[in-house]
Every structure is written in C-alpha cells, then in structure tokens.
Image 1 (spheres, rainbow over the protein chains, first blue to last red):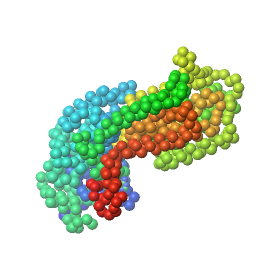
Image 2: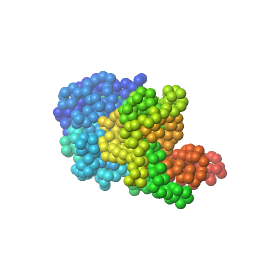
Image 3: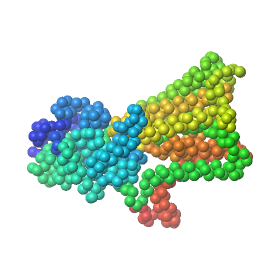
Image 4: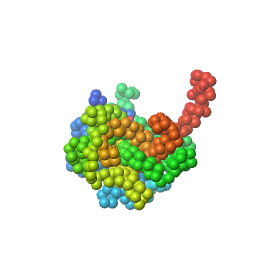
Length: 262
Length: 366
Ligand SMILES: Nc1ncnc2c1ncn2[C@@H]1O[C@H](COP(=O)(O)OP(=O)(O)OP(=O)(O)O)[C@@H](O)[C@H]1O
Ligand SMILES: [Mg+2]
C-alpha cells in the first residue's frame, strides 16, 4: 500500500501554510523520464527531506524549482499563486535560494566574490564596491556562524565543509525564505557533516523553509519534519518523520516488492 | 540540464590549506605573478648586458612601439582566455581591418578618423561572428576561429590582389599625428605607445574592478556556477569576442596610420605573438585566472626577445622558432606546476616502471 501512486494526489501531510509547491511535474530528457507527474509542497518553517536512489529525479526537481530547467508539464505555486520560474535570477528574486549538489563555487575567486556572485554591490552601477562586498560578506558569515576564517580566502583553498558553508551562506545572503539544498553533506567528513547539520537547524530556527535532499538517513531523521520519496522519477511515498521508521523509508526508496533494483 | 550532471559527486575534495598535497591556490597564483616579473627583469638585464644598444631610451621606445599592437589585442585576448575561450583569427582580422581602412581612405576618400572607426566596426563584426558561432551554435572556438583565420586572410588577399594598398601621397589628417607622431619633450616618445598603454590600463581596471570583469572570471572559473547565479556565460563570452575584434580593428587602423598603407599580409605572425604574450602572461589555459598586468609583461618579454636577438645578430627568422618554443614551454610549465605532486610521483616510480612491467608499477599510486 505504501508505494501506491494514488496516495500522492492527496494534500501534503502537513497543516502548515504552504509556501512553495509543485503539482504534477514531469520532465523528460530524450528517452529518459526524469520526473513523472510528481507533486511536492514545502510548508512555512519546515524541513522537507527528499530522498531516492541515484537518478530518482531529485536534482531535476531542484533544477526546476530554481529555474535552471523548465518542466514539460505541471505547475509551481508560490504562496498559493501559480508562478513560472524563468531563470535562476528570477528564482532568487522570488526568495528561492539554492545550494547545488556541485556547490557551484568559482575556485579561483574570493569567498566574498562567491557570496555575491551575479549580484555584486556596485558604485555607479558597474564598478564593484569591493569594500562593501567584503564587509557584507564578513557580516553574513558572522551572522550565520559558519566557521570561515576569512572572506578574502580563495574558494578553492577551503575545506569541503567550509565550501559547503560558503554555498549555504550565498543562498542566504540573497535574502531567500525557501532554501533548496542538494546533498549538503555528501563528501563531507564526520565533523563537517555535524557542522552543516547544526547550521541547517539554526536556519530553521530563524524561520527558513527548507527542502533537503540527502542520501543519509540519519541526517534525514534528525532534521526533517516530513520526507518525500522518489523512485525512478515517480513519487512513491510521503511520510511524517515522527510516524515512520528508517526501515520503511529505505524500503520505499529501493521498492519493497521488487527486492533490489528493477 | 540537471544541476549535478556536470560534476561528479566526488568533485569537491577537501582542499584545506592545512591538508598535505597541493599548495593553496592563492599561493600558486601569486608565485606565478612574481615569477613573471622576475623573468621580465632577467630578460631585460640579460640583453642589456649582452646586446649592444639594447639598453637606452631609444631602444626601449622601439620595443614598446613594436609591442603596442601585440598588447592592444592581447588585452581582450586575456579576457577571452579567462572566460575560457580564445581567438586564433586575430592576425588576419588585423590585416583585413588594416586593408579595409586603407581602401576606404585611398579609393573612397573617406576621412581617416571615420575610416578608423569603420575598421573598428569591421573588427567588432568579425568578433561578433566568432562569438555567435561559438556561444550560440556551440562550435568550439578553436575550430571557429581557425576557420575564420583562413576566411579572413583569404578575403584580405583577394580584395587587394595580394598587394599593398598605399594611401594617396601627401594626405593630411590629424589622424596621422595621433598614430605615428612623436612627442619630442619625452625623448621622442612614439605616440602609438600611448595607445597601447591606454588600452592596457583601461583593460586592466575594467577586468579587475567592474562587474563585467567579475563575470568574466566567473564564466571561465565555473560556467555552471555563473549560470546558476544568473550570469549568462554566453553573453560574457560573446562580448569578449567582440572586444577582441574591436582591438583588431584598432591596431589595423593604427598600422594604417603608421605606414600610410594597408598590407594584406601584415598579420601572418600576429596571432602567435598575441597568444604568446597572453600565455606567457599567465592566463590559466583552462580559464578562470589571469590578469592584464601579466599580459603586459608577457608582451614585453616577447618584444624584448625579438629586439634583443636581432641586436645580438641572430637571424630574425629564429624569432618565430623561439616564440613557438616559449609558448609550449610556458604552457607545459603551468601544467607541471599544477600537477607537481603527480609529476613527482611519476619521477619517483620511473626506475621501477622502466625496469619492470606488471602490477608492481601501480604500487606507488594511491
Ligand atoms: N541534462 C540531462 N540530460 C539527460 N538526462 C538527464 C539530465 N539531467 C538528468 N538526467 C537524467 O534524469 C534522471 C534523474 O536525474 P537526477 O539528477 O535528477 O537524479 P538524482 O535523484 O538527483 O540522482 P543523484 O542521487 O545521483 O544525484 C537520471 O536518469 C539522469 O540521468
Ligand atoms: Mg542529484
């Protein structure tokens, strides 16, 4: 019963006010169906985890929500109103911030320049106001309590956790109220994973709504209020964290009735 | 495209400054700049001591005058390299703009200033075509600009019948004083040097301080990051191509002012000189790093070499040979520095690998 697609048409399992939602999204890449009629909603101040095996369509979901790709079908809603998210910049303007799976940092540039990538503060409209940029970056880093030594360091010289912090800080500096995070703890060591987790909690405490993609069940169960499960482009389940177990979620991810991979 | 399609999941290695292995990126970049300044001084000192008449204001001006054209085009070429592209058609583009300007003045009586603007316009158009085919159609710039190189030199030769286009004798215009005049009070400083310095100064400030400059670095450093941040890498690259074309137009016009003629074969070595200046100047061959000040030094090193070798009595055709060798050496050096650790490992295991084949040779790989 858990894998029945029919159950998904129902409203999300939350009574919070829905901030951002996707309804009936589909996306094809040639022969590949990356997403097939999936729906998902993020409520105010909650952390929704999105899980699924490699290639399940999680990153595709994020790409659509952040305007990098357009869906073949389906609608997006922000505060209940239908929106077309045209581009990453448009998503930013709408208050949707994204931490991409590949972090999307420019290694050769300073942390400050990375934090303000694409929206550098300027004088006269075209000269970058570097002093202001560095000041604001330092301020943001301090406010977010991310462990970054110096905003003038090159992004390429940072550790994995620090890079993650920069990516998250950048998302926040833009003034987003919805944060999409694609595997923020992948490739991180134990301590740095811890730090990111604390960080995400801190953000929720500040009222941020978060969509968190992760392969790590411990993280999901520690952080999320709800979990949505994708399998091969389809949404195969949604659970309130307090009412489910890791076994059940893992079962949904791999597909109970099929044993392992199809 | 999906956000992670372009980068493997393990693509973010912990590169902490404390970790062993590769050195901090910043240090690598700084060392390269310092090394370049050192080499410039060393080359200058070497020729000053060994080549007669090398040291002296007149000869320095001469080097600067010859270097000016290379520099003017090498500045936007630096932008292009940083953005992750390059343009091999600058030589013939220079020649065609040069011929175009001379033809306008000689055959149509166009005012030289207007003709110069037209030449710059032609250069920009050529750059726009290169940019369009590269960024919109998606053909690698290597192929586009190599094709363009042939197309443009073909046109330049055909429209002139492969002969020089002289401007009318006794033609008068302030354009000529502005391009081939000399400033007496400054020890007969050739004016054309000022054009090069102006382009370098403006180009350096623009790259370093403006938003566009930041986006040039971001485009070449990580195009996906740029795109995700709302920057259009295509637009940035396109503009860099157009700037490069404009520079070709400018040197075409300056050259026409200097010799009062157009020469369809003028640009034959020019692409190489510009590439050499830029690459010696330390742009990252993979994009994302480089500076105009580096390119300025690169252009000077090339210029000093050409000048010094002639003064030493080396046959001038050797110059081509040396320029080519330097490009390859510098590029190899850059990659070797980047892969220092891998290289060291390879050297250490070389005896074993030469001595035996089989699984043992993989032993020292981790
Ligand atoms: N640009 C693209 N072109 C073609 N196919 C794509 C593209 N992007 C994604 N896909 C395909 O769409 C499917 C879903 O990919 P997606 O990246 O969304 O998976 P994912 O759930 O994020 O996986 P992972 O856990 O490995 O990150 C995969 O089969 C993938 O190969
Ligand atoms: Mg993914």
